[in-house]
Amino acid sequence: MNLHEYQSKALFAEYGIPIPDGRVAASPAEARDAAESLGGSLWVVKAQVHAGGRGKAGGVKLARSLAEVEDAARAMLGKRLVTHQTGHEGLPVDKVYVERGSSIARELYLSLLVDRTAERVAIIASAAGGMDIEEVARATPEKILTVKLHPVAGIQDYQTRELGFGLGLVKEQQAALRDILRKLVKLLHECDASLVEVNPLIVTSDGAVVALDAKINIEDNALFRQPKLAGLRDVAQEDELERRAREHDLSYVSLEGNIACLVNGAGLAMATMDLIKLHGGEPANFLDVGGGATAERVEEAFNIILANKKVRAILVNIFGGIVRCDLIAEGVVAAIKKADVRVPVVVRLEGTNVDKGRELLAASGLAVIAATGLTDAAAKAVELARKRP
Image 1 (cartoon, rainbow, N blue to C red):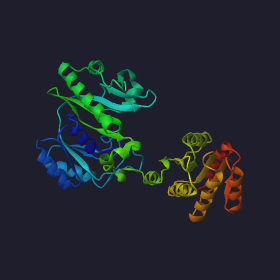
Image 2: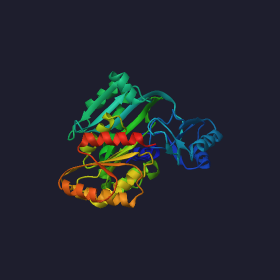
Image 3: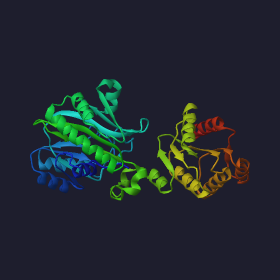
Image 4: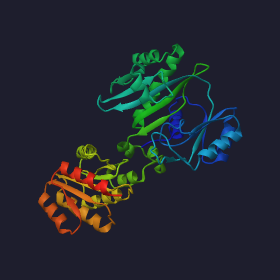
């Protein structure tokens, strides 16, 4: 679950991490009032969306008067912001964050994330802050500093010194960085965050170290013990189909293609998408109905798939183990009968009760296309999708 910048900065403030003064606003008038209450003569108006790249997309504006603050907020609110991370449809801007301007001497990058391969919390830092860190890592990987924390020992002073020297900070700034890092580690653990990112972490003209931006991702599987944070979820920023899937315990991710996938097992789902790509097609989604799928859940999965207007073919790929093939077949038949299915459906079944599942599909009288294997299923789905307008 992602948090907005203003929500993340509220958490930073709770943990004593230095941030510039700011206020959230839902209207141009509120934005003006926020700037007036903050004081000063320079403000930054930031669109609140769950995506990076806001500045390049016009979602971050400098304002040197209260009228400019109001105009900037008016230009953003009620619109959809399109960045390189949102896709072509963009995300709705329902709130803006008005922040007092900062005197920036340097911009740094800092993040904490869960490195699942190393089974450690990793701290990533770079002197090239304020930029796309992915591009920095690709073009100049020597500028990326990485420190991994022992789960028992936690962050150590020698690690903060290593990062401080690597970022070119003077003694007082290194002490400030050490304090910030300790508090960020505490926040990450106590809030069950999978990512805490500060880009940029700035050094001001008077030498202070301040978090100018804030991004926090909370681990979905830990939300049951984070009711306060769960209440911060902004469903307007999330894909509608992904939200529906989550409500039915389905693992679903929307993609840009036109061949929908309904699969049991994450690994098999990934392999299915790979084969679709191999045959020249583009998957429309990742969908794992899980090991305990029922006919009802399969039917709901079908309904979610059909809600995507880009879909030109559906590939059902089930290897029956815990999930019996006949249950999947019942769900497919029920979904097709209830929904107005106007795209071809390719089904590949293998495993437990496969013969019974195939019999159910054959006896349904539906125009379901049987496949003899995964490769055959992917090839048929790609070919059928190409023929659709």
